[in-house]
Length: 567
Image (cartoon, rainbow, N blue to C red; front, top):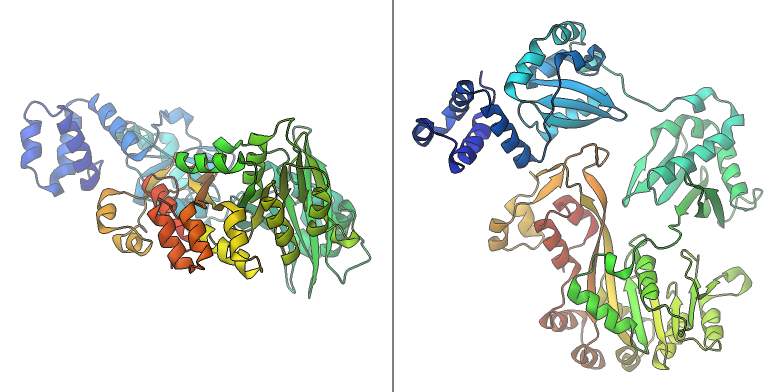
């Protein structure tokens, strides 16, 4: 049996041939061989000089973006073999090398498939981190007494192996006195894992906690049992922390929670509860505090970035940021405010809630219950002599009317709006009752944005789902499909086994040029405005997303999850 498959061996031999390493007749044998003989030819080449293994391992590490393991037989642990069944180890020729927290370190002569990674993860209960081993080293490890004895005692199949790593089941004793600790643990876990939202939900036969990380909700099973047994007490505890009325369970309530983070910093959470059939449902959003990114760090295309700077440094006009909840609209707006913030400018903001602190700005918290609506706040702002006004969200006709008038009377007005894209924002303003001549005159710039999970660059592999047909469906041309090689992350230690690490903003930036202004005044349809904008170089969210796929920043899966296709 050869160490390498014919496919991998052929790729390695090609690299060796190009580098001039196949000397002494090996080069001619390589050019004369059939593809099926590549494995045997490479084995013979390596057997002639054991130092050549190092060449091959380096080639494979570069090709598959993996690292090499240097493990001696003495470093192997028999306990690791209890995590994986013997038949799986023997069939796929890999060895468990070590365990580190949530990761099982696995070594093999060849890169293992994503399907096998998932299979090992399923039986071991740990994320899998792969590394490469030289054939001679693997043979030594596999033949050692430690490995032989461990495999003799290892479970025969995955069905007999159910040892998954779980959180300590301290909550499942049924002691309701642990409610405070339980709630604190939820908050601490969410902060430590970079969660943006916490969902606490009760149903007829179960309850669950889900946390949103990088835009995706994930169930935390370790909390399920205790939560179901003590759901009412948990809800009450969180309502007390949020200063809500614990006796009122018939209406929705809003509140706020402040906790101390792991570094001693204050972390604010926005709290909301609504009554459902099986108890109150809680959603908490963890607010980011001070904006961590300046405008130039948000990932705008250089040309679009200049359009934004031109709009936010103008003495008047309306700049709108659109997108779904959680897409980073407020972060973009505050990045813009940070850029222009200086003592000679009077900046006023109306928000619900105030998510970021901006030194030198007058920040007002909207409160509908006491009549402090966005519309009323805006009216007051106009008597505060501001140059720049930020409105958290344009929600109604009253707010949009005052905002447009402010933009037309010497103020820079920044706000958010819920629309699918930049072009449809124009139609949305018209539908809210703003005359077309006022939209054309007031509107300066629209930014539509999404947040997509970035592919982990440490575990990129070719994406089997990115077939030519799938790529064509999302707008790639036949020529582009020939030139690109879509990749995706398949999970490693660096990304916690998810295949994703961090998030990437996807932006389309529409500058209201004189031609666009003219189109609005002529009551052009959305499709006609889109064609007009594209003639001036406008790139849609989908255009930017396709560029990110080609550059391996996002995966095809993430494109399809985050973006709707052009209609």
